[in-house]
Image 1 (tube, rainbow, N blue to C red):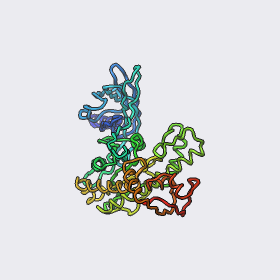
Image 2 (image 1 turned 120 degrees about the horizontal axis):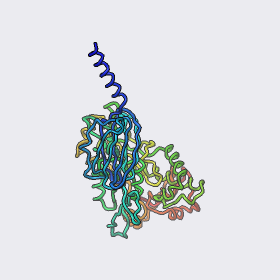
Image 3 (image 1 turned 45 degrees about the horizontal axis):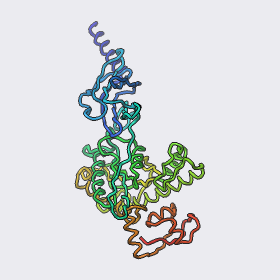
Amino acid sequence: MRIVLAVLLFVLQSLWLSAAYADVKGVRLWHAPESSRLVFDLNQASEHKIFTLSSPDRLVIDIYGARLNASMDDLPMKTGPVKKIRSGMRNKTDLRIVLDLAHKVDPKSFQLKPNKKYGHRLVVDLYHQVKVPQGKITPLKISKPVFEVKDTLKNKRDIIVAIDAGHGGEDPGAIGHGGVREKKVVLAIAKKLEKLLKKEKGFKPYLVRKGDYYIGLRDRTKHARKANADLFISIHADAFSSPKASGGSVFALSQKSATSEAARWLADKENASDLIGGVGGLSLDDKEDLLAGVLLDLSMTASLSISLELGGKVLGSMGKIGRLHKRHVEQAGFAVLKSPDIPSVLVETGFLSNPSEARKLKGSNYQNKMAKAIFKGIKGYFQTSPPVGTYLASIKGGSNKKSNTITRYTISAGDTLSVIAQRHATSMAKLKSLNGLKSSSIRVGQVIKVPAS
């Protein structure tokens, strides 16, 4: 009887300890250009604390009421700020993890609740820091890419296309048939699109995500803005509960989301004085609220109009190599599309949940076809409507001078005079002169003269 009671007490004690402690079941480390991310997979939520130590530089992570049930030996520490990771129990109840650092970091931590892919997680982001004169420490900032101007025709600039491969790092995106991961497929397509644009005179690609790491959704558009992009294109691969769903799609921002986003930017204008620099170099910090609101509305309308037209070109090109899920550009409130100064589209290359499409998207041959289709759509749009001051606009302008042909254009909802001018590689001043307009006001249904494309 005593033996039975002893065994029972041992089992109950084991169950109590198991319930009392949060188990760290896995540890993952990802490196990005501006930061590194450490992720702890837990079986339940647990409070934590982080703090830094110097001489030498270290980061201490205390996870209360937790224990380590995972190996940290295989974490990638040849690159990034983490040289070594040590762990031990503190006060017999708390798990202490110490990161030996190569240099100072700016750490930030937060907890994530379970989702369809993961359970409870503790995320620790390590933002790189560099030393500057006077011994001060400042976070490393994303520098603007320096693009060499190689064009000789009037030294006109290239059209810059920001290519965003969705997801990355600890966020695999959709996991499709056969275990294929969205993050890997879309990065491969993005790199192939980058190569095609590099070979095309008048274009300069900028790859937002170059490797297997995660970038925040709004940070992706910040990267595009720092690159002075003329277009932001985000590449994804869809998934659905049914394996029958198939076909590619192209999305632009919804009008409702555009309106709410304009309000958000207006509220934050004191921290974003140059957020619409891509459309005329306008600044909001010295504008009254009413005028700033009008400027933002015009900017969002112009970007959305271009996004829809360009998205249509890309969708039409995609339809020539495979099935389309919808034969029109759809509109939704995707966070990566909410940029008032950069025309933005999101391309869903197909459904990874569909066995046939998953096999195709996993293969290099179909990835090349998809990249070429997206490329043809982008090229087709900009050949017709190149931004003023670019190499393509110079070529188009030269051909227009030879013919001086004038055609008529009917104003549609969402049109502005600046957008129409950009589409036809001309200026607002020329459109006003051609039509005898005293202001930039136009109305739906109005017919105006424009230079023929």
